[in-house]
Every structure is written in structure tokens, then in C-alpha cells.
Length: 214
Image (cartoon, rainbow, N blue to C red; front, side, top):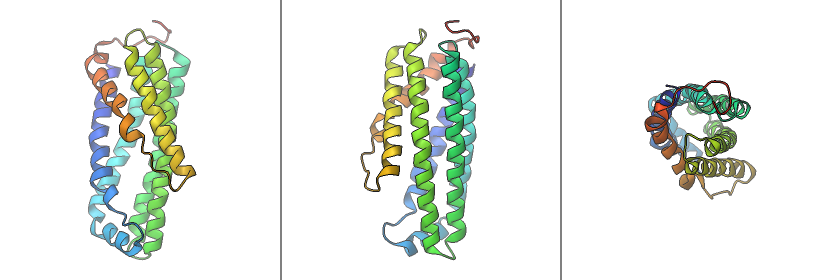
């Protein structure tokens, strides 16, 4: 049951997050033109509010996923599973804090294009920090899946690679304004396959007891 809940939540998150980020937020900024960026914010204000609200839902679903994955993986190692869950909760909190930058940008757009751009940049930097935390979480989940007797090791390996991609991208963007590798655009496949596993194979697992190997 917990695996199914986590899988469904992850699937819903992927749809909402993809629509919000790639359908709306990615189209806001005009490089080197603060006035044009502010104009986009004003013109797309209703869509941006809807996208930001969707991202808030995503952050809430992240907490549900943290619980579901803890239930599934605690049979492997209760302590590491709990740590992975708390890391995802920390990621969700950092992500929720980042979303406030979108609302700040909306409020600033009609008054100060410079402040609006600053708020958008603040959202992006906070989001990258959240992604670095997420990368550590995903790597730990990958390790637990690797060690699990009820899942093929390849899922764990791919999740570790996915986590490394997010961590490197997040940290790289924070440390260098010229960072442009975009590893997570290639390494995310592990997440997709893990969602499928949770929905198909994981859904048939009984919820674990607190004992490792149980």
C-alpha cells in the first residue's frame, strides 16, 4: 500500500511539476532584459499563480512520498530509511521556501523590474539548493534499493546515478554562474523507472515491519 501511494504521488508530482516548470516558469525570464521579464510576469500572472500553487501541492506530496518510501525501505535498514525520509522532508521545506520567490516576483513586477528579476533569481538559487538536498536523498534511496532483496539492483544503481546528477547540478549552479552541464536532464531515467517499479512491483509488497530484513 505504501509503495502504491508513493508511486501515485510521484506520478502526480511529475505531471504537475513538469507543467509548472516547463510550461510556465521556464518562459518567464528574458536574458538581459529586466523590463521584458517584468512584462512576462504581469502578462502571465494568473498562470504563474496557478503554477506556484501547483508547486506547493508538489511540496506537500513530497512529504507523502517520504513517508511511503520509509515504509517500503525500512525493512532494509530502518535508520538509513528514516534519514532518507527526513532528507526528503528537508528538500520539501527548502522547495516550499523557494516558491515564495515566485510570489515576490509577481508583487514586484509592476513596481520594480529589477526587484522582480532578483526574486526570480532567488527562486532559482533556492531551488538549486533544494535539488542538491534532493540528490543526497535520492542517492540514499538508491543505496537502500540496491541492498534490498525485493528489488533488482539496477533500480538502485540508476537512482544513485540520478541522485548524483541532481546533486552535481544543484551544487554546480550555486558555486558557478557559468555552470551548464545539466546532468539531471540525462540521469533522471532512474526516477522514471523507479516510479514504474513502485506502481507495478512495489505495490504488491506488504508494508514492512520495523525490523531490517523483515
